[in-house]
Image (cartoon, rainbow, N blue to C red; front, side, top):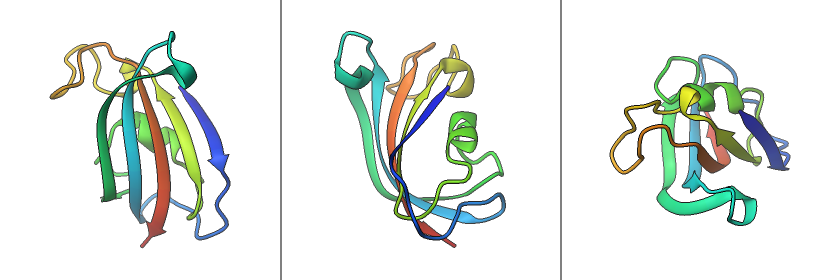
Length: 107
């Protein structure tokens, strides 16, 4: 599990029990590609969820902790913290994932 701040936010800090609104792009990890970004799988704006309640993969729960509004973070998430051996939709089993996530709001 790897979390890298691309932009450090200066707004409200995300905490357990708060709602989050994010924009994100998801790629399958490919070590032969720049920044490990292989095939783009998904992109979503204004995705909202309650932080700390298991509504998202555990890699997000770990990797977004402490992030502030206005921040952008890259998460490289191994399968054990994502969708495991079973995969999900167009994400194959045992896939390592790369997310670029912008925290646009906390409520």
